[in-house]
Length: 150
Image (tube, one colour):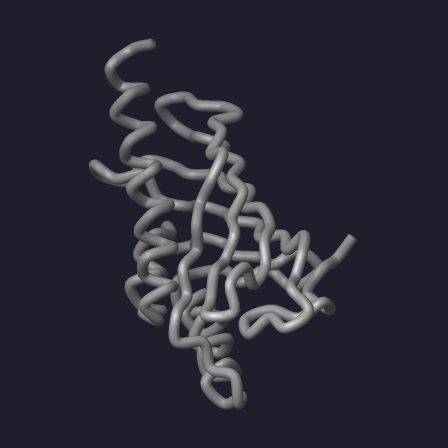
């Protein structure tokens, strides 16, 4: 393994963590910084949201819907596991990860991220992310069984 690859992997891991930490804190604007200017966020079965403004609006809309409900999660932690670099070059990386989300009910929902990242300056940013929800708890506060698309 060459030095550039080790550096790229760590910078990619930092971007993935930045996305989840920002989202868990309800900081939609900070979350968008994990994306390229024209990055794409898509939830499987839904439309693709292109650009930081569209992504911020999507994430902000999710937060607004959650805060309007009676069961507002006070604790939100996205746990990223089994991050696998399926391809890595100096120009692009494809990464697959599992996530689980813990709220005050315990395990809330789980799924997968499929990401393409590119280098921008000294960072690696998400050019595209596909989010797939695979399982939702019956009493989930952050997802509904309808969010599972097979």
